[in-house]
Image 1 (tube, rainbow, N blue to C red):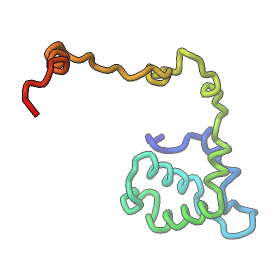
Image 2 (cartoon, rainbow, N blue to C red):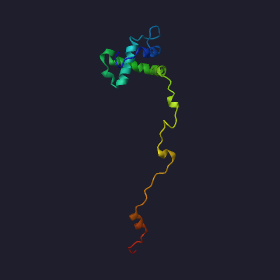
Image 3 (cartoon, rainbow, N blue to C red):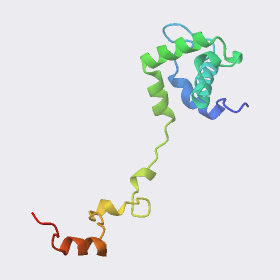
Image 4 (tube, rainbow, N blue to C red):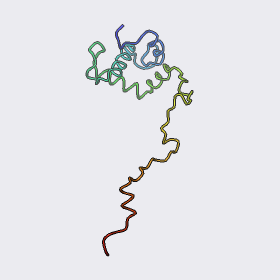
Length: 129
């Protein structure tokens, strides 16, 4: 298996939610697994559509099919299907949350005036008005 390809386990989770399956209304997709692998490859590598490897097919066909699936809500359904419940974010305690001391309402520290500045402020003015 190549680095960015779907495993059989991943594909079995995604397959029931894809469009263009045999026996469904509408057109039949030639190879849904290859198409989904191409989309995931693009997403994982961050390349533009035009730079997809030739083994996935024509980039424009894949990009148009991706848009049709996005408008049909297929990607949201696939995302929900493969999402595993993660309750770790619910268990928040003081060991996972680090707050800055300013978050507790501590006042900003002010500098103490230096001795020469205090003496100058206390002395009387030497010039005559």
